[in-house]
Image (cartoon, rainbow, N blue to C red; front, side):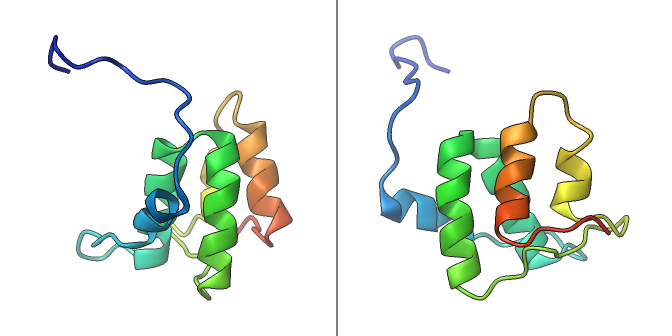
Length: 98
């Protein structure tokens, strides 16, 4: 980060910014829906991630898309310490373990 840039914490994201996580081009051989979910998980707070999941599922996207190892995002998130809020949000919208 440049020294002249202030780090912004806990900035509330607009609905447009949340929807922006839907528009991403995955690498070759990566399921587009899984890629979107991972980007949102890595880039959003738990509250914003929950908002994203509402938009994601309303768009008819696959909450249980698999990665190259045959895992859902819930499988992956469940192995991370202190990510219970993310796992709960996934479960609330129908996320399953593979």
